[in-house]
Structure formats: structure tokens, C-alpha cells
Length: 142
Image: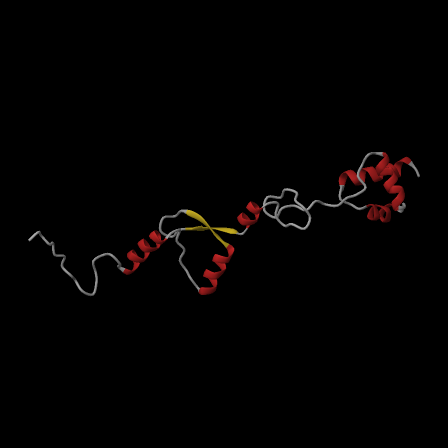
């Protein structure tokens, strides 16, 4: 084994830290055990497993989990919406968005108050235009 092959192994490991020793051995025509010996001799890891990263914040987490915490899990399942009345950006769950799309809803509001303002403006609610015009009578003490 020449020193140039050792230098090539170290160079490839530094450039591609996740390449396995089996792939290195096939690439260079050297046994996997010899590559492990060279890596151990130079204090480099022989195990190249990539860490499982959180799908929301990209921090390392335990292998079977997709998210590192319950906060990341809940935040990943939220979407941003903009209220049509006041323009505030607010969040709702993916389930909420899917249900609205399935039902064919076209408008999105941040609260019932904004919904009432929009519907009142569009359909004339609370503007005094009713089917019957009742006069308000003030009752005085008799």
C-alpha cells in the first residue's frame, strides 16, 4: 500500500464525509478492512451514518422520529393565511385548509368578527336595509 492511496482515501473522506467504506473500497480497489485501518489510524470515523434531521428546523433528532419536539411537529402542520377583511396573517392547521378546499370555500377570515364585517358589507347586513322597516319606539316612564 503506497502513501498516495492513503492520501487519496483521506482526501475522498474529507470531501465526501458520508461515503461508506464499501464504496471507497470499490472505487479504489482496496479492501474495506484496509480502508477502516487507515481511517482509524488518522482518527477519522469509519461509521458514516447521516444523522436524522428534524423536518421543520433541521436539527438532529432520534432516528424513528420525524420532528425533534412537539413544538416543531405542531408548527410544521400549520399554514399561513391572510384575512380578507383586516389583512392580518394568521395560522391554521393543514387539516383545516384541506377541509375548506374540499368544501369549496373561497373566503378566509381570522375571526368571526371579520367574517361578519365582510358579509355585512357584501350582503347588506346591519345596514338598515331589511325586508321590514321597523321604527324604533322609545318607551318613557309612564
